[in-house]
Image (cartoon, rainbow, N blue to C red; front, top):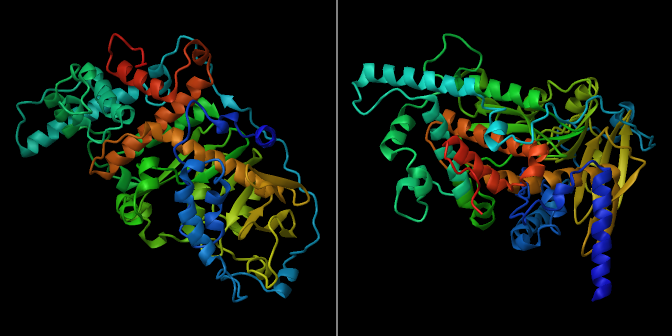
Length: 535
């Protein structure tokens, strides 16, 4: 028994060492509590082996959700034999002779990514006396609050001119807007779906903050609250006009306050789903709950979890921001990727992508901008144009676990790796001549190309990070799409604020957990005298 314990410990230390060499934050091994989920941010519906890869790589780290992952893995394994079994490659893929003409070869060469051209970490030093509100206001400053005051009062005035006066309304103040934000944000701390529960006598009531504002006053502000009161005469994103100025301001503040590490991920994060709910609900409930009128993608630092950039689009809107004509198509995800990476060209950044983004054309375009990529491929979800067919279909001879094949075109490598199924990767950021390993508690070390290990490590961190980020999900569910986007953006801002707090001198003074930081922020927004978090 002792020997087994020593072996497990040595494997953990080996994994920790390799994570550090791949620039993964040590936070991946736990922050202050166990993760409740490692929800993949790409489908694990069994559409292809590669789509199920993230759940596979996380199975040992998340034993308490074994049944949830086994359900997805079983579906993936069940369909894995059908992927490419006919020998015919996906649309746009190349025959053997065409691949040779295009320069694809099994002769491998070493690939080296130039040094990163950015310094990494917070862009400004916060004092040790800084509180939670100070960090939050790096993203939602006083001028932003004042704009909410102005626009809300303008909307209320115009509304009453059109539909009749409201005797219960009086112009809102900046202090009231801050309190309003605090009340709604408190739903993320208390995990209650209705903000009005604060004033109730039920389980989620909170008398300690309810006295700061009456429920009637809160409901009046909720009724008239606006970021942009009136539709602009012109603009490129008309469907999001009520939230776009705030998104632009938020985006600028993300870039000004933090410089991410060299390795970053493009993905769709969890939006409004509690990870515990996801692992226990039926697929029908999940589909019903996930119906939204917008799509949100982010570029996220894999060393800290800081969300560097967001991209929001309407799914069925009119004009250029409508995605109806591009839904589930590679060109949509390619467009999103370009938008998210427009500010990182020339820095030698390494980007990790999922199947819907990964493509030879996009990666080649990025390489010309000194952006290096490592992405998971799916023969059903990825644009496989220009890739060799023989690397995208399953061979007649059964593969051994850990076995891999690689072909190269210039510095681009196409990898086919077997681990209870074939998983394919496209990369120009990791040398195909270098070997890595996947370390698991049960099966020990599984050999793989370095690119596979790096992909698994970085995305596993982001999956685990979703649980921490979800602690700031605002459970208030408005009907208006712009309001949904606004509160989601506020959740992201709080997440980033905590990361900056944790990297500052203020964290050494009072080491608040995520939950405590959220509680402190709520109390400071409400301007309560006792701002210490609940113990």
